[in-house]
Length: 185
Image (cartoon, rainbow, N blue to C red; front, side, top):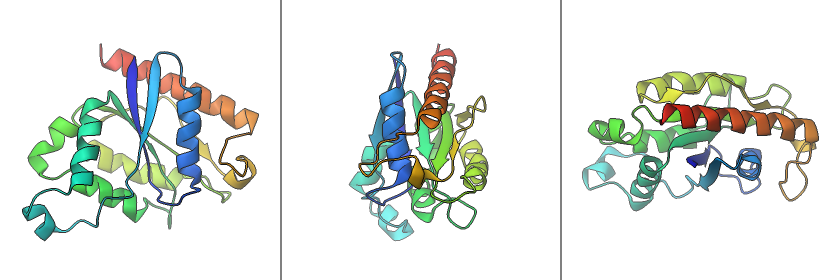
């Protein structure tokens, strides 16, 4: 079974990106399990703090990524790019630099995103590509999951209720899970 670690690039409690990760976990095929990990407790990167040792939340997330078969990032789009809190988390996770291959090296990864606006999260997803390439991940380019107008697609409890979007997400997660299985053989 493919163990896929999902990370939301948003800290908001009612984040559409956290909600779409929950829907991905629900819709994952029987050959995969999506677990969600928060970046909420990761502090702002500070080289002086790093010199004293990595903060416990960073170590915990790093080890969760190492233990996972794949990485699924759900990203909002802020000012046509990656949210600062998400990039900050990745910056911490890449420290020390010598640890990058252990954490990210050849790990299957993909990005999806949801936004209340009409423009999807295409620019944020594109901005993640050079970051994930630099980290040495095996990026899956076999599908794309961009969700605009998310406020109309999720109910008040954060459940994805729009059937066409659920169908697209199910196919996306199935495709990524199949890639992970093939990649990790």
